[in-house]
Amino acid sequence: MHTLFFLCGFVAVAFVLVITIYLVISGIPAIREVGLVDFLFGTTWASTNQTNPQYGILPFILTSIYGTAGAIVIGVPVGFMTAVFLAKVAPPKVAAAIRPAVDLLAGIPSVVYGMVGMVILLPGIRELFHLPAGDTLLAAIIVLAVMILPSIISVSETALRAVPREYEEASLALGATEIETYFRVTAPAAKSGIAAAVVLGVGRAIGEAMAIMMVAGNAPNMPNLLGSVRFLTTAVASEMSYAADGSLQKMALFSIGLVLFVFIMMINVLLNVVLKHEKE
Image (cartoon, rainbow, N blue to C red; front, side, top):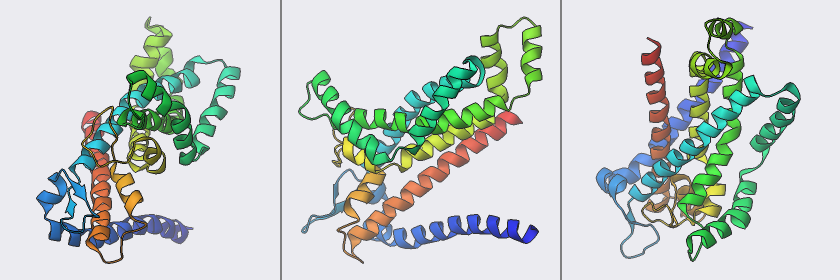
């Protein structure tokens, strides 16, 4: 059994190492040829231009940051409040009816979210803001906020339920109300689990491609809340199918994947450092 457990853990670590090494090997050549500064801070992406191709991904980076941040600002409070409601406030019958709906949200394919966004969300944004088209960064943020809810709700609820009941009983005995106890005792005690839920939500938001491609317009513009934009993931997904093998365009797409990978790793490391510092 020790050998079996070791092999399972080794396989998980090996996958991460293989992905990391492959992205580094495939992504570094394009960054060397284009130039690190021009690649990361260039504002023009014209990979199909035959005379003067340009590979600046700053619009993609900023769009991914703004889109993920907007989804977190909307999704985390809603998901956390829902988790508190399911774990501590809701009657058992109500909670039993809501949990399957939350689980169903997690099982819906991303393309379905994109289709619903195209049919319902985009016309509403177009009419509300009097735009020629509704495929905007705002639409992408709303879709991402809905998509990250299941992860945040499920993990946060589990963390809240794992807090010992004695903590809450002690708070109530000191005169605190139930709501005060939930937010000032239970939630801080479940902080690590809630942070893990946020990390999962960030990973889902950053890594989503298909639904975003359907509602964001997929145009390589600088981020604008009411304008068409392109994320890092959609930049790779939209051009990988026709990029020629060995071309600078395809190598640049691998470089975008490397940047996205580093971006996610930085967020995870930052959250872990913050949590460790607060714990100490």
